Amino acid sequence: MKFDVSELVEAKRQIDSTLHKLRQTVKTFEAKENADRYKSQITLAKRRIQAFEISLALIEREIKDFNNKS
Picture 1 (spheres, rainbow, N blue to C red):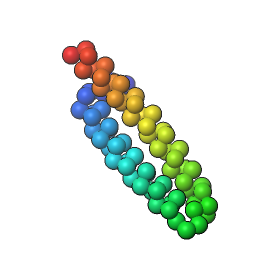
Picture 2: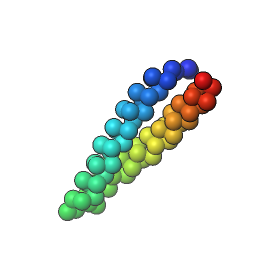
Picture 3: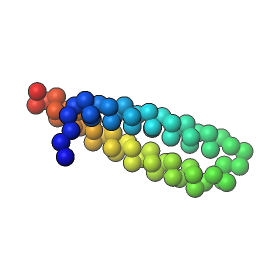
Picture 4: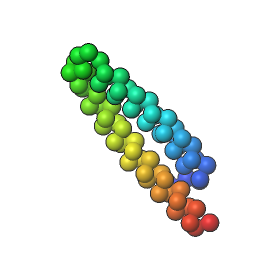
């Protein structure tokens, strides 16, 4: 699939926002009195963070490649 730069920039913006929220979620769960109780939620959020970080890196690479071709 081909995407134009504006679509990639918007996707990056949305992922950055989601990453911020996920990182805050992890901090909140880890700060709870009984953090072990939230272990599965913490693990899920961390895995999502990793997936979004990979997506973000790929989007940034596509933007860079597009700008180098221009």
